[in-house]
Amino acid sequence: RTEEQGTHTVTHRELRFNGLELVVVTSSNKPNQYLLSKAILSGRGWKIGGPLRVGNPAKSALRGLQKELPKEGELEFRGDTDSIRVNLAGGRVLDVEYSCYTG
Image 1: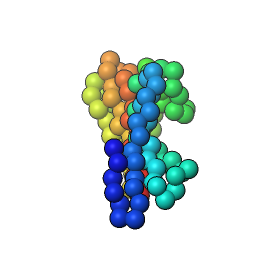
Image 2: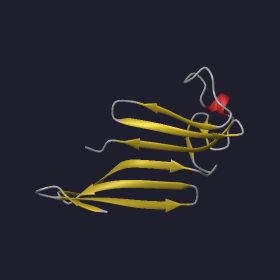
Image 3: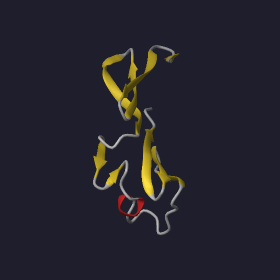
Image 4: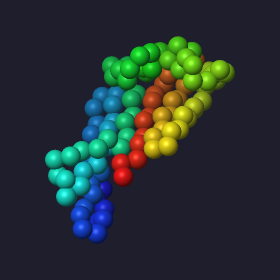
């Protein structure tokens, strides 16, 4: 999708791979600069960092973030300019969505 921003145009592009979806943003006044707006990991082949990985037990993947973890459902952790949403099923990480403000 493309948006007019006064003096320039902002374009949001979706890139899809097996188990990974990315949304990147670029501006016509900085055509060679891409900013990550969203990443959705739904396949085991994509590692985020540490134990947070699709298919891993929620207890180890989210250690230290929340005391009580549901076996099923969605958890969201928010910062000032970004957030991460984790879907759980059967006590394991089903998928992870990272979103951030791109300005």
